[in-house]
Length: 521
Ligand SMILES: O=C([O-])CC(=O)C(=O)O
Ligand SMILES: [Mg+2]
Image 1 (cartoon, rainbow, N blue to C red):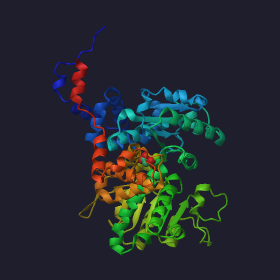
Image 2: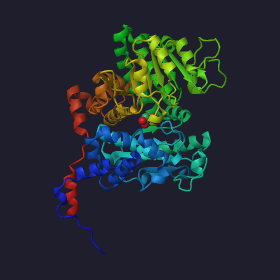
Image 3: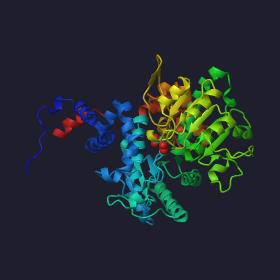
Image 4: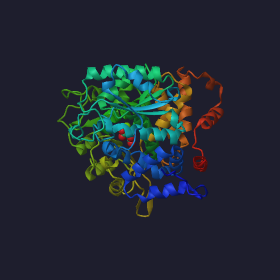
């Protein structure tokens, strides 16, 4: 048997450079994902170092949009066990399954998906695990959470997607999803077991189908330390983007912040989550609830959502209009002409739904129309950046869910904003963990948005991750204000000292050179 020997001069060469070159040599995004996953398995420290040193290049691979493709293909690209699967067949012994996780007492943050609505890609079943892994990589990179404190979880409850049930390589249990009663019983046992096994844990729910996203957030949010990234994280980051966009567009029109009319195209967990976050913000500006509500319009596949529609899903009722009784409005451009929105937000997963006539209608109403096509991944975006710039002659105030490259129009270079919850959840999580808050309140979510909006302009936001510390500070202060913080020591600190403490606690990978030489010994 031969014994592996390191080449003698390995320690003198920079293995970081070698890995980066290997990564860059792959021309297909999914291959890059697979490469990074392998690197993480071989040398996690080097993986995080490479991620931190090359964020704008690597994030679109580990996270949206490529992570979407990794999920779709996960059963086929699977190489090694990662994260934790908790299966419907584990019912009755979930606590034992969770307790098998190494160093349970170190667990601080778990991202939990049931794979039922991964990004805009639908029910991917057990293939959803990479979304939890990708979100947690951003916690490590963006908020300095220690990798060993993170727990990616996929609840393997079956799938209603026939092509996976027929796929011989499918990784999950081969059954349809459970009934509501069965799922409730499973979730109750799971959440209780989570808080028993991981007493210091924050749970982030991710990419549950819309009904279940609202259902389990409502059910557990005051019982456990939990938040839903798609409802509250997206809500918070888009509120922040809206505050900045409204400032920019007011420069053009002189319109006060409270004078906007916002049209939501898409009424799923993200659409309604964002709408509620804006509503709450307007009321805190002093606007009466009914008036704030009247500024928000929602649209689904059947058109403008009105209260007289039969069989309206529960989560759509709150914003259903009671002040419209004309003929049903189904075409987006007609709805725009009726509503006269200042902002159009897309959370529909309908590719290219914002056609030229839609964008032109927004431009006819607003010198600087706010248009946010937020659906993920990029191939499901309602409006490509190049079209947005061309059709508005560069006047659009734009943010998309997934990243786009800058565009030059005439002699001006335009930078697209990105409205993705990745800018906020690491900071919310960090603040919640440090303050040991009992639960995550609406106030904490809102203060996170205000901190993000006030820290930098949209362009800088997209490239600066030190923002997480500022967001965490705002979250800790709000937890204190509401008396939710179990870590009372932080109350004594000035803002400056608290910010310093937060930054000191943030984990950094150690240098790779040491890892290589240690391996040689
Ligand atoms: O993961 C992302 O890019 C944003 C998100 O939560 C989603 O689209 O569900
Ligand atoms: Mg999500």
